[in-house]
Structures are given as structure tokens and as C-alpha cells.
Length: 470
Image (tube, rainbow, N blue to C red):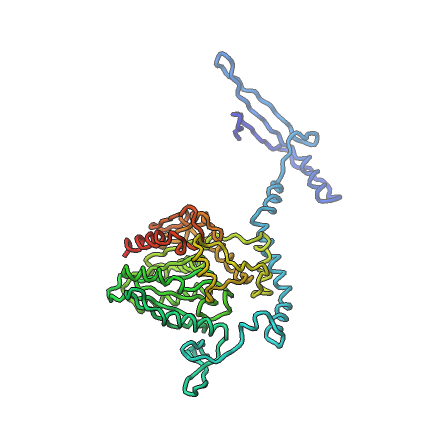
């Protein structure tokens, strides 16, 4: 063995056999007696130089036996003890504790569920009442055979068919449809339409499209909005895409806009990822041969990014654009990351009481803020526990799989964003395996880039990136 000082150490074990020691007392004392009777010699050779350039070898020998304590040899248990308290083991311990608590609390969740479905009045009860509505806004479900069906009867006048839907969903869907029908298409270069898309789970999602008047489409764009908003907010930007020859589709994911579900309640973002994949398959089938791009904002960007981890989807998408993606999100308090799985399991729809009625600072344009937070289709209440937990969960999943991102992408972020982390977008750019990737950071801009005073600059960057890849 070579020392760092240049010497050489030889460790030799004696030839004498280990004496038999009777096993008495504790096992630790027994091990110590064996160690003390184990003859070991440690010889150190040091090379020293003289002024005449000659060298001599100094030899030092230390005999290790029962009468020596100069050198202590261990089995390395101390290293294993340190590993026991590593961050990986602590995270594993926290996961085990969380799982145990969730298992113990399962009976209490059943009681809560029974109360919610019984005669007890709950907070969200007013959002789950049933009403009769025209069939054009009916919530369609799949029957046992997989066919789409809907219940129906008549209202005044009797000849108008109707079906039972959630009252809150019906109000939102009717408003979303009315906005599409009242849109005159701006300068006449766009045609706006809507449709209802049924997921594999049987939920109905509201989708809309903006088509250029010219039949020669250069490509397709699928828009995915962020948390608490809806696809209709991006109508102006969609018409800019139309002017550049792109047909645009927008989809309101579960619990948002005109789609099914309690407003802004997300039971699982995996649902949204699966719904996006199914919707993309529909878009591919309706527009064969056209390149397809996806543009997602905030949580919508995270949903798109996770969908692109599926090779079957990634291979058919020509590129994605992410504005302020939720790749990195910090909880309001560190304890939330620990308690969120438990609270989300017991009370998934619970809302934090500290609601910001004026909305978060997501734009430096005052009029844009007024327009957003006065929109009935935009949820302005406190975030629900399950929704917040799902965002943390998808962000954590993405951070662990950034190196698996292969799709061409453009990521854009404002450096003053307080909702999602700009540094996480930098990590995405640095770690992604994509051969075609770009990042644009805008100094001082906030979260809603397409609603900032510099929105035309943002739109121009996106259009340039798309046009170069058609």
C-alpha cells in the first residue's frame, strides 16, 4: 500500500493461529478478545534524501497485539451508520410513514365520503346540484358497452330534448359555447367553432378550434391553458396563428372552462395527460400529413411535457412551446409537501381559507388582470388541496425525467415569475436530450407572458420558431 506521503505500508498477519477463546459474556466482549489476540504487524518504509542525493530507507514497525492500541481497525460499520441517515434513506422513511398514516386514516375517509354523499350539507354541495339543460351542452357518458349515450326527457317546450347535468358545469359550458357563437372572427380571417370531446373515462371536455379561412393550412397547433383558466383566453393569439396558416385547437382540461368536473378541482393530472393524448390522436386522424405543434402555459406546459415522454406521442409531434411551465413549483410552506398527500387523501376538495380575491400578480398589465379575474370561467378561489398536490407531483416527476425529453422545444420564462420557477426552465434546457431546443428568458416579466405589455414580442418569438419548422 502506497502512502500519500510517498512511503509504503505493509500489513502482515502473523502465522500463529488465533487462540481459542471461550465464549463468555456479551458478543461484543468476545469480538474484542479475538481482535486483541490477532497478531498484526504494520511496517512503514519511508524514503529519505540526503544532501548528497543519496537515499536511505527508514523502517518503522508497529506490532499490533493485546498490548497495543496504536492502530484501530474497524469493519466499516461507521460508514453504514452514516448511510442510514442519508437523504435517500430519510425520504424513504418519510414515504413509509406517509403510507402508514394513509392506511390508518382510510376508515375516516370512508366516513367523510358517506357524509358527502348523504343528507349532510357540505361546502361544495351547491356546485353539484342537477338541472335540465338542452342536449347541445349535455354531459355525455359511456355506457357499459362503451357506446356514448345520454339520458333525456323534455322541458318547456316539450319538443326540446334535455338531460341531467351538474348545474355548475352547465352554467360554465353554456357560457363557453355562447362566447364561441358570438365571436365574429375578428377581421374575417378566422372561423371559430366548438365541439364536445368524450374521454375514455366518460367525462365530457369542451374543445374549440380556430381555422384560417384559407384552406391551405401549413400546420396544426394544440393549445393547453394553465391552472384555473380556460382555452378561450387565448383566442386573440389563436387568430395570430391563423394569420400564419396554422389551424388551432384548444381544449379545456378536466375541471376547467366548459369541461366536466368541479371548477378548478383536479383529481389527477394524469387524467389531463391521458386526455391530451387521446385528443391528439383525434387531431392527427382529422388532419393527416400536417405537422402538429403543442403550446402549453404553466401547468398546461407540464401536462404537455409529460405527454411527450410517451414515445408514441413524441414521434408524431413536430415540436412544443412552453411558456412559464410548471416544471418547478415551490409550496407556500415546506410542511405542505409533507402533509399534502395525507390531507389530499382525506379532504381532496378542501380549500385553504386564505384566498387571494384580487388574484396573483401574473401580469404587469392592469387591464389584463381585471379581464382575467372578472371572467366567470376563471377560478379565483383558493386552491384545492388535491389540485396543489397534483401540481407538486407532476413537477417532481418531470424534474426526475428531464433527460428523457427528446421532442424539439422552445421554453420561455419571465425572470420575475413568482408562480413557477424560471431556474427549472433552465434545468429543462440544460438536461433535456433534445437536439433542437431553445430557451428565452425575459428580464422582469411575470407569469402570464402572452398577457404582459410585451405580448406582441412574445407572440413574435413563438411564430418565428414555428415558421422555421414547418
